[in-house]
Length: 185
Image 1: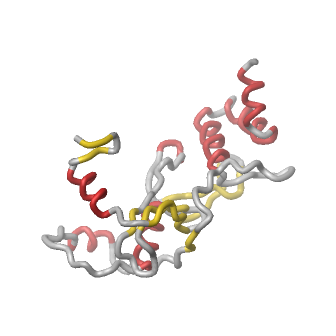
Image 2: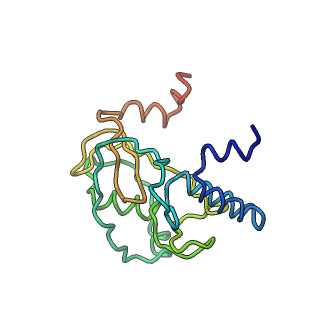
């Protein structure tokens, strides 16, 4: 089986024809298109239902509130930032968590690019605009959320519940280097 036939088996025809058209002009644009297609960010000029390629990790999804506007300038935030010597055990509001996730990893706008009308933009830089970063918040002491491991979905600005439970000691061990993701040291 040639590579083209193998691609035909996994990429719907319309996406494959767009990919072929782009690869002859700009390999970066072609790879970006293919990556975004597999992440399910858009499906231009639909001829029918696109096969579900974007993996949903949970049936339990929590829509986050709209992010709060930030009234502080960047220079003021940098000058006033200090490390805490001790931490208080007060809950973080779900509004603050929503704002942090949105400003750090959310879709902050849309533009036209690569011949598409809706192309997502993010606040952080990424080679080829592939945006490969995913967030898996470990929630502890957030008002309105149960403790557990979540996945942040920037396209719906929501959290998918992966596993509920307390992960405080595991996170402390990972942060201190007592264990790694491969196992204990």
